[in-house]
Image (tube, rainbow, N blue to C red):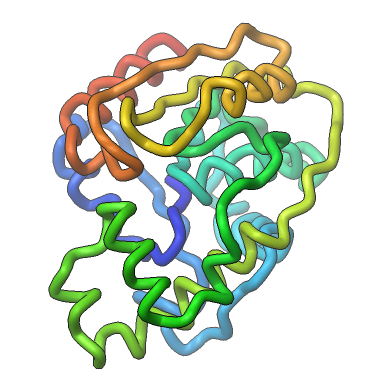
Amino acid sequence: MLPFAGASCFSYAALQRLLPREIQTIVWEPPGRGQRVREPLLRTIDAMVDDMLERLGERIRDGFVVYGHSMGALLAVELARRLPDAGLPAPRHLLCSGREAPSAPRRSPDYHLLPREELVAELRGFGGSPDEILANDELMEFMEPILRADFEAVAQYSYRPRPALDIPISVVTGDVEDILPEELTGWQNESNFPVRMLNLPGGHFFIFERPQAMCDIIVRTLQSTL
Protein backbone atom coordinates (compact mmCIF):
# COMPACT_ATOMS: atom_id res chain seq x y z
CA MET A 1 0.00 0.00 0.00
CA LEU A 2 1.54 3.28 -1.16
CA PRO A 3 0.67 6.63 0.41
CA PHE A 4 -1.15 9.72 -0.76
CA ALA A 5 0.44 13.11 -0.06
CA GLY A 6 1.02 13.68 3.64
CA ALA A 7 0.25 10.08 4.59
CA SER A 8 2.12 7.92 7.09
CA CYS A 9 2.08 4.18 7.74
CA PHE A 10 -1.06 4.70 9.84
CA SER A 11 -3.07 6.47 7.14
CA TYR A 12 -4.58 3.28 5.71
CA ALA A 13 -5.49 1.91 9.14
CA ALA A 14 -9.23 2.34 8.50
CA LEU A 15 -8.98 0.13 5.42
CA GLN A 16 -6.62 -2.37 7.04
CA ARG A 17 -9.07 -2.94 9.89
CA LEU A 18 -11.80 -3.91 7.43
CA LEU A 19 -9.72 -6.30 5.34
CA PRO A 20 -9.86 -10.03 6.13
CA ARG A 21 -7.13 -11.18 8.50
CA GLU A 22 -5.63 -13.52 5.93
CA ILE A 23 -4.65 -10.54 3.76
CA GLN A 24 -1.19 -9.31 4.70
CA THR A 25 -0.64 -5.59 4.14
CA ILE A 26 2.65 -3.72 3.92
CA VAL A 27 2.42 0.07 3.97
CA TRP A 28 5.46 2.00 2.74
CA GLU A 29 6.10 5.00 4.97
CA PRO A 30 8.10 7.83 3.38
CA PRO A 31 10.81 9.56 5.44
CA GLY A 32 9.98 12.55 7.61
CA ARG A 33 6.87 11.20 9.34
CA GLY A 34 5.68 8.47 11.68
CA GLN A 35 8.43 6.04 12.57
CA ARG A 36 10.81 7.82 10.18
CA VAL A 37 10.21 11.32 11.49
CA ARG A 38 13.91 12.16 11.90
CA GLU A 39 14.82 11.30 8.30
CA PRO A 40 14.97 14.02 5.60
CA LEU A 41 11.95 14.44 3.38
CA LEU A 42 12.03 13.23 -0.23
CA ARG A 43 11.00 15.64 -2.99
CA THR A 44 10.92 13.54 -6.15
CA ILE A 45 8.99 10.47 -7.24
CA ASP A 46 12.22 8.77 -8.32
CA ALA A 47 13.75 9.24 -4.86
CA MET A 48 10.64 7.77 -3.28
CA VAL A 49 10.82 4.69 -5.52
CA ASP A 50 14.53 4.34 -4.67
CA ASP A 51 13.61 4.32 -1.00
CA MET A 52 10.83 1.77 -1.51
CA LEU A 53 13.17 -0.61 -3.31
CA GLU A 54 15.73 -0.30 -0.54
CA ARG A 55 13.32 -0.76 2.36
CA LEU A 56 10.80 -3.19 0.89
CA GLY A 57 13.02 -5.28 -1.38
CA GLU A 58 13.63 -8.04 1.14
CA ARG A 59 9.91 -8.26 1.95
CA ILE A 60 8.71 -8.60 -1.62
CA ARG A 61 7.78 -12.12 -2.67
CA ASP A 62 6.00 -13.29 -5.79
CA GLY A 63 2.23 -13.09 -5.53
CA PHE A 64 1.29 -9.57 -4.46
CA VAL A 65 -0.78 -6.60 -5.56
CA VAL A 66 0.30 -2.96 -5.30
CA TYR A 67 -2.34 -0.43 -4.19
CA GLY A 68 -1.89 3.33 -4.17
CA HIS A 69 -4.21 6.31 -3.77
CA SER A 70 -3.55 9.69 -5.47
CA MET A 71 0.23 10.19 -5.23
CA GLY A 72 0.37 6.50 -4.32
CA ALA A 73 -1.16 5.57 -7.68
CA LEU A 74 1.66 7.36 -9.44
CA LEU A 75 4.18 5.62 -7.20
CA ALA A 76 2.56 2.25 -7.96
CA VAL A 77 3.20 2.59 -11.70
CA GLU A 78 6.78 3.77 -11.24
CA LEU A 79 7.52 1.03 -8.71
CA ALA A 80 6.14 -1.64 -11.04
CA ARG A 81 8.47 -0.42 -13.79
CA ARG A 82 11.52 -0.49 -11.53
CA LEU A 83 11.04 -3.84 -9.77
CA PRO A 84 12.34 -6.10 -12.60
CA ASP A 85 15.52 -4.02 -12.95
CA ALA A 86 16.09 -4.53 -9.22
CA GLY A 87 15.80 -8.30 -9.65
CA LEU A 88 12.45 -8.39 -7.83
CA PRO A 89 9.16 -9.97 -8.92
CA ALA A 90 6.56 -7.80 -10.57
CA PRO A 91 3.16 -7.32 -8.95
CA ARG A 92 0.29 -9.40 -10.26
CA HIS A 93 -2.00 -6.35 -10.39
CA LEU A 94 -1.91 -2.58 -9.87
CA LEU A 95 -4.89 -1.10 -8.04
CA CYS A 96 -4.86 2.69 -8.40
CA SER A 97 -7.39 5.14 -6.98
CA GLY A 98 -8.02 8.86 -6.95
CA ARG A 99 -5.62 9.70 -9.75
CA GLU A 100 -5.77 10.61 -13.42
CA ALA A 101 -3.49 8.74 -15.83
CA PRO A 102 0.23 9.47 -15.35
CA SER A 103 0.34 10.82 -18.91
CA ALA A 104 -2.53 13.30 -18.42
CA PRO A 105 -1.50 16.98 -18.52
CA ARG A 106 -1.45 18.39 -15.00
CA ARG A 107 -4.26 20.84 -14.25
CA SER A 108 -3.75 21.21 -10.52
CA PRO A 109 -1.89 24.22 -9.10
CA ASP A 110 1.57 23.98 -7.55
CA TYR A 111 0.20 23.20 -4.09
CA HIS A 112 3.70 23.23 -2.58
CA LEU A 113 4.05 26.93 -3.48
CA LEU A 114 0.71 28.12 -2.09
CA PRO A 115 0.59 30.34 1.03
CA ARG A 116 -0.57 28.40 4.07
CA GLU A 117 -4.09 29.84 4.02
CA GLU A 118 -4.62 28.76 0.41
CA LEU A 119 -2.99 25.39 1.02
CA VAL A 120 -5.29 24.74 3.98
CA ALA A 121 -8.31 25.73 1.88
CA GLU A 122 -7.27 23.24 -0.83
CA LEU A 123 -6.73 20.50 1.74
CA ARG A 124 -10.12 21.17 3.25
CA GLY A 125 -11.63 20.86 -0.23
CA PHE A 126 -10.00 17.44 -0.71
CA GLY A 127 -11.80 16.22 2.40
CA GLY A 128 -9.02 13.95 3.64
CA SER A 129 -7.56 16.10 6.43
CA PRO A 130 -9.41 16.38 9.76
CA ASP A 131 -10.37 19.92 10.74
CA GLU A 132 -8.67 19.45 14.11
CA ILE A 133 -5.36 19.26 12.22
CA LEU A 134 -6.05 22.02 9.69
CA ALA A 135 -7.18 24.42 12.42
CA ASN A 136 -4.31 23.62 14.79
CA ASP A 137 -1.25 25.82 14.14
CA GLU A 138 1.08 23.50 16.05
CA LEU A 139 0.01 20.42 14.11
CA MET A 140 0.19 22.31 10.82
CA GLU A 141 3.74 23.41 11.64
CA PHE A 142 4.62 19.71 11.63
CA MET A 143 2.44 18.61 8.69
CA GLU A 144 3.02 21.52 6.32
CA PRO A 145 6.62 20.65 5.31
CA ILE A 146 5.59 17.02 4.74
CA LEU A 147 2.67 18.00 2.54
CA ARG A 148 4.75 20.51 0.59
CA ALA A 149 7.49 17.96 -0.06
CA ASP A 150 4.98 15.39 -1.33
CA PHE A 151 3.15 17.95 -3.47
CA GLU A 152 6.48 19.10 -4.88
CA ALA A 153 7.34 15.51 -5.86
CA VAL A 154 4.05 15.20 -7.76
CA ALA A 155 4.39 18.65 -9.37
CA GLN A 156 7.92 17.92 -10.57
CA TYR A 157 7.02 14.50 -11.98
CA SER A 158 7.73 14.28 -15.70
CA TYR A 159 5.97 11.49 -17.56
CA ARG A 160 8.20 9.34 -19.76
CA PRO A 161 6.39 7.23 -22.40
CA ARG A 162 7.52 3.61 -22.09
CA PRO A 163 6.29 0.19 -23.22
CA ALA A 164 3.08 -0.90 -21.55
CA LEU A 165 3.36 -3.15 -18.52
CA ASP A 166 2.37 -6.82 -18.71
CA ILE A 167 0.35 -6.22 -15.54
CA PRO A 168 -3.43 -5.71 -15.24
CA ILE A 169 -4.47 -2.34 -13.84
CA SER A 170 -7.69 -1.36 -12.08
CA VAL A 171 -8.52 2.32 -11.53
CA VAL A 172 -11.07 3.51 -8.96
CA THR A 173 -12.35 7.08 -8.80
CA GLY A 174 -14.95 9.00 -6.82
CA ASP A 175 -18.01 10.13 -8.72
CA VAL A 176 -17.61 13.79 -7.69
CA GLU A 177 -13.83 14.20 -7.58
CA ASP A 178 -12.13 16.56 -10.01
CA ILE A 179 -10.99 14.08 -12.66
CA LEU A 180 -12.22 14.39 -16.23
CA PRO A 181 -13.13 11.27 -18.26
CA GLU A 182 -10.46 12.09 -20.85
CA GLU A 183 -7.85 12.19 -18.07
CA LEU A 184 -8.55 8.53 -17.30
CA THR A 185 -8.23 7.10 -20.80
CA GLY A 186 -4.43 7.35 -20.69
CA TRP A 187 -4.31 4.61 -18.07
CA GLN A 188 -4.66 2.17 -20.96
CA ASN A 189 -1.21 3.25 -22.18
CA GLU A 190 0.29 1.70 -19.03
CA SER A 191 -0.98 -1.87 -19.47
CA ASN A 192 -1.17 -4.53 -22.16
CA PHE A 193 -4.39 -5.72 -20.51
CA PRO A 194 -7.75 -3.91 -20.73
CA VAL A 195 -7.77 -1.46 -17.83
CA ARG A 196 -10.73 -1.91 -15.49
CA MET A 197 -12.44 1.36 -14.52
CA LEU A 198 -14.50 1.49 -11.32
CA ASN A 199 -16.41 4.30 -9.65
CA LEU A 200 -17.56 4.84 -6.07
CA PRO A 201 -19.67 7.61 -4.53
CA GLY A 202 -17.64 10.46 -3.05
CA GLY A 203 -14.93 13.03 -3.59
CA HIS A 204 -11.16 12.65 -3.73
CA PHE A 205 -11.03 10.71 -0.46
CA PHE A 206 -13.95 8.42 -1.28
CA ILE A 207 -11.79 5.59 0.08
CA PHE A 208 -12.57 6.87 3.58
CA GLU A 209 -16.13 7.88 2.78
CA ARG A 210 -16.85 4.35 1.50
CA PRO A 211 -14.17 2.25 3.22
CA GLN A 212 -16.07 -1.04 3.08
CA ALA A 213 -16.77 -0.64 -0.63
CA MET A 214 -13.09 0.09 -1.26
CA CYS A 215 -12.07 -2.94 0.78
CA ASP A 216 -14.49 -5.09 -1.20
CA ILE A 217 -12.72 -3.97 -4.39
CA ILE A 218 -9.33 -4.80 -2.87
CA VAL A 219 -10.53 -8.27 -1.83
CA ARG A 220 -12.09 -9.01 -5.22
CA THR A 221 -8.91 -7.86 -6.97
CA LEU A 222 -6.81 -10.19 -4.85
CA GLN A 223 -9.21 -13.10 -5.34
CA SER A 224 -9.23 -12.69 -9.12
CA THR A 225 -5.48 -12.15 -9.40
CA LEU A 226 -3.65 -14.41 -6.94
